[in-house]
Amino acid sequence: MPSRCIIFGCSNMTKDGVSLHTFPKNPAFRCKWTAKVKLTRARWQGPSETSVICSAHFEEDNFESGLHSLFGIKRLRLLKRKATNVKLYHVIQEGDG
Image (cartoon, rainbow, N blue to C red; front, side, top):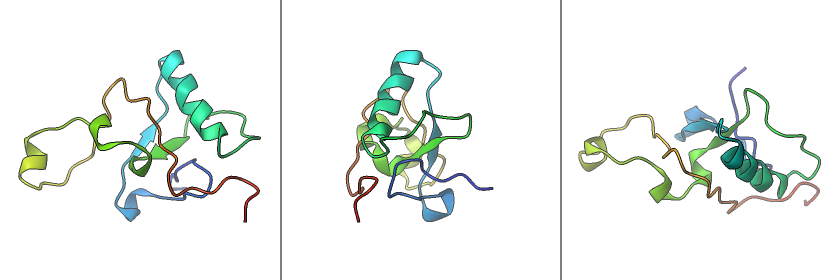
């Protein structure tokens, strides 16, 4: 089964033109990501091994830059190791609707 973004109200997959990012192994960063997701999914128990957040929920400066971006070459977008600022724009909260 293909992975989808875990943020409530977002079901982006790689076929939608986004990159998917697994939760960090670093406990402090993992906790920050988890707290952001829980703002949209109050009853969520926390990330599994397959939980991902799509690139739409990160600021542009959270990604590694390289020569590929200067030439418009598409490749997997890599998050910086310390990317913790998950944004929740354009997302509805669980129970809204």
